[in-house]
Structures are given as structure tokens and as C-alpha cells.
Amino acid sequence: MEIQDLLNDKLLKPAQKTEVLSKLLLSGEIGPEELISIAAVSKDPAKAGCVESIEWATRTRPEIGTSACLEFVTGCLSSKSPRLKWESARVIGNICHLFPDQLDGAVRNLLENSENPGTVVRWSAAYALGQILKLKTVHNPELIPAVEAIIEREEKNSIRKIYLAALGKCR
Image (cartoon, rainbow, N blue to C red; front, side, top):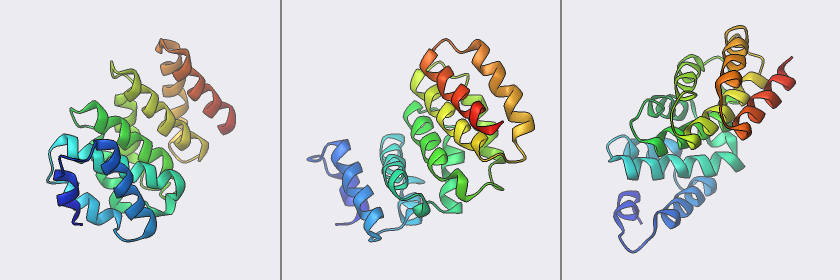
């Protein structure tokens, strides 16, 4: 089955499409670039489904994520779609350790999303920023005070805990 046919299949629920695509990624039948090329020209719901599939796959096997994948999801962090923002942040959290020298745009966009009104978007940004903090990259001198400020203003304890745990591991 072609990826575009799968995405257009009205008989499958979005979760089923995500599962099929992530299994194809994990098995190596398709690569992330193939999925990204389709996502890039798709509407937000289909694009988010593609990114979610990459997130599922990279959670199990981060090495599936490529530099092009990182670049694509970094751009998706600026989308209007909350789902695209949170799925992209999770992909970044899963693969950031593979590309510690390519995180400038991701850090900038994730910090922006840390102020999003949506709880899931903020939680996902916290997850990704926490993973980046733990890498102890050149971003930490800027990131640590920014995260401390986020902790002070964040209303959700569950999100504050993610940041606090990451800070504890990076010092």
C-alpha cells in the first residue's frame, strides 16, 4: 500500500494509520525521508499523523531519526497546529542525542512553545528541552536560566517536575 493511499483511507482511524506507518518505519520498509516528503505537502492532520508515526518509531529506535527528520520537525514546532507542535517536540526529545550540534532552531522553537496555552504542547516542550539539557551541550548556559524561569511561571506541577528532573541530571 502506498503511503498516500494509507493516509487517504477513510476506513482506517488515525491511530491505525499511525500504527501501520510506525511499523513500516521500524521494519525499514519506508524511511523517515519518504514519510517527511509526503508530510511536507499534506494538510496538518495528515502531517501530524506522519510526525506521530515518526515519534512512535523513534521512541523505540531513535537511530531511525535523521538530520533531515530533525530539521523537518524543528520547523513543525512553529506550526499553528497544537498536535504538530507536540508530536514534533516528542520526536526531538527522542532523537536529540544523535544531533547535539544541530539543536539551535529546536531550542529556540521549544522555548517559544514552553509558553503555549496548551498543556500538552508545554508538556512536550518540557520533555524535549529536558532531554536536551541532559546532553550538557553548548545550549546549557542559556537553557538553564530559561528553564528556571519557566519553572517559576509554569502552573502545572507535572510540567515543572519534568524540568526539575532534567536540571537535577545536568548539574
